[in-house]
Image (cartoon, rainbow, N blue to C red; front, side, top):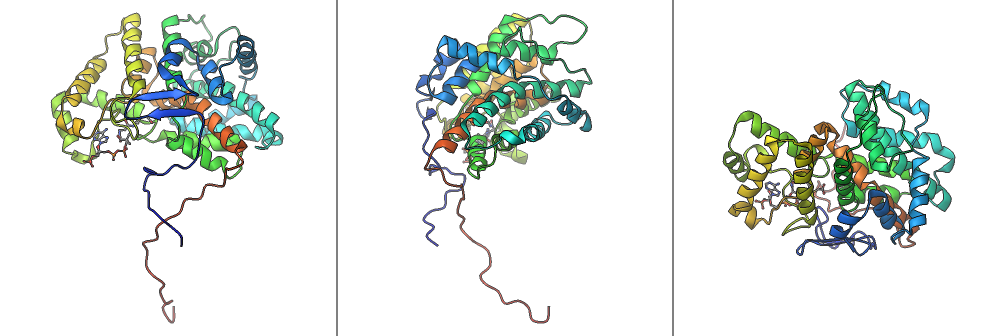
Length: 390
Ligand code: CMC
């Protein structure tokens, strides 16, 4: 039926044109709108980079100030939505809470969901950027049985997020600039990565003209899996298991190579990067900075470094071009900051949100966009006669 090729996992064919992010996987290059990830990570902020991704240019100072202010004024959740959290068990995985809450968020804005209305799209962009971190912090607080805090408009975006997670009603929250800078950097590194599984999901759902909340909620669910965003949690679980079992790093690496029980070296390998992941280098720098500042001596960091060294020297990993990816060291940093492992992928989601929005908007305004509808290669039975008498 006109089908020309099978491309399992979309390894060879492009699903779209895009002007947002450029990756050269062999050279380890990542650029947002032409700017090197290294420059952005060292000099920009989460919201400035979000503006760049969404609107295509760096903002002027006044544009940025206005954007920050708008986001600050939209952080509050409808009080009714706060009760949504009480319907869920305190053991709920924060990624499930996040995607459900984002889906539910749209019910408060039913008169402004039209994907063809630029003002509504603008409004929902601000709403999502402002409210996702608050939802994430509430999911964390809920798991601890602690009271939700209200956002504090005297703080920056990242400062506010840290306070919402780690502050409490009884005492003032002290901002640590080293943590703020590290979190800004980690979020910037996650902001976009062209047509990865979750972004492709957002574009596919958006191609049906579903609203932005529905599309982003689907993206969050795609990110949840351990082969994608869920890898940061899976890395920490792996490091903890190696630590607790007393198994040597070398023995663990042998089990990975023998593909015993399908065990993988989580945080290693990438569909696109085949020499190194430029984000991983920047994350590793931050890991050393944050742990030194907090005076944390985490044996899991030592295990991670040992694992990296062992894998990089091993023929199995060399042959397959497997290197540490962005998720390898992030968990160690998040843990030192005080985040429980189950919230790690939520941090990835906050990071990726501007990229999802940029792609959703790019697709929604591109006249060439068509509803996504992959083909298949049918391998089932040929036509069969209905059994007589049945
Ligand atoms: N540990 C052990 N072996 C691996 C790993 C790993 N982490 N990754 C790939 N391989 C092997 C794989 O078994 C295969 O071996 P063989 O040729 O003998 O069958 C070979 O390397 C090629 O791998 P692939 O699965 O065909 O590669 P892919 O491009 O389909 O998968 C990946 C990419 C990221 C899903 C995979 O490398 C992986 O599962 N890594 C661990 C999970 C992870 O860290 N994910 C985060 C990715 S970066 C952040 C993000 O985008 O979310």
